[in-house]
Length: 402
Image 1 (cartoon, helix red, strand yellow):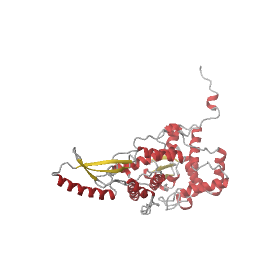
Image 2: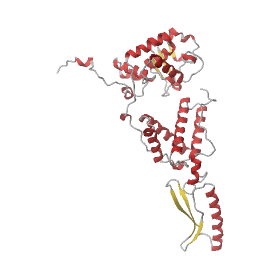
Image 3: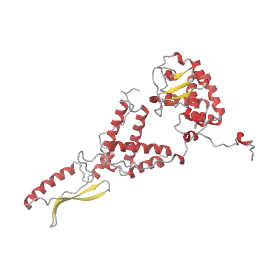
Image 4: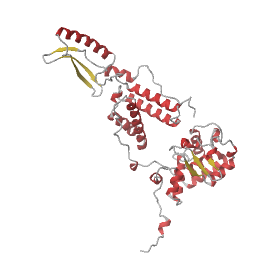
C-alpha cells in the first residue's frame, strides 16, 4: 500500500456553487425592531427557518433593565449587534453555541479529510478509501441536483436520507444491494458527524435496509462447455491468467485478494493457502485447500522459484515485488470474453459462482463448501444453490420401506 500517494480525492471549489447561490435564500430576515408593550418589552424580527422552510418570528425579552431610558439604550445596541450577526449568516433557528451553523459542504470536507487520514495511517484499505470517496461524491452531487439543495448540516434529516436512497435505487435504477450499501454509507457519515459534535443524532439510524430474503444476487452461471473452452484456450495462450481463474473457480479467492497473495502464504507440501487477516476481505486469518490441479499448475509455471515475499500476481500477472490493481486482472477477463465471443453477462466473478455451484452439485458437503469459500454462514452458501430443472437421480429411484 502506497500510503503517501492516495487515489484522487474530492476537490471542493471555493468559488460560487449552487449551494452558495442558495445561501441568500436561506439567510433571509427582517430588521430587528423594539416592541414596547405593557406586558413585556422585546426585540422582534423574522428569520428564515431552513428546517421548516418558512419565515419565523423571533422575540428577545429585555424587561430586566430599568429605567426605560437605559432599556432603550440597551435595545439600540442589541439591535445593531443582531443585525450584524444576521448579515454575517447567523440564524437563530440553527445556531450552534460554539461555531455557529455548520454548512453541509464543510461537514463533507471534514469527512473527506478524515477518510484520507485513515487511509494514510493504514486503517482504511485502498478499496475502502475509494468506496467512501465515491459515496460522498454521489451524496454531494445528489444534493446539488435537488430543487432546493440543503445548505446547513442541520437540514440533513431522515427525509433527506430516504430521498437520497430512493434516488439511487429508483431513479438511477441501482440494485437493492447497492441501495443497502448507500444506507450503510449514510449511517457511517452521520455517525461521524455525531461523533465530531456536528450533529446531535444520526438521522439515518432508524432506516432499515432491504432484507436479503427479498432479493438474490444476480448470478450468471457459466455452462460446463464454456468453462472447458475457457480452460483450453488459456492453457495454450495465457497460463498465468489461467492460474488466476483457477484460484477464483476452485479456491474462491476474490480478485482484490489475489493481488495481495504472497508466495509465502502457500504450503506446497500440504496443498493449503493461509490468507492473513490483513489481506482477507473479512479480516480473518483462514486456511483453505488448494486442489492438486491448481498446485500442479503453479509448479509448472515455476512461481515458487521466486522470493517468498513476492506477490503471486504482479506486473503482467506474473510473480513480482509490485502489488498491482485488481482491475488489471479483470481487464484480462474482458479481453478473453471478446476473443472467445462469450456472453457479456459472464463476469469474472461468475467463475466463483460457477465453481461453488459445481461443488454443491457434486455433493460436497455444504460445510466443506462454506469453509472453502470462507462464507460466514451456511445461509450465504445456500444462495449459490441452483433451482433444479431436472429430477435428482439420487432421489428418482428411491424405494423405501413404506
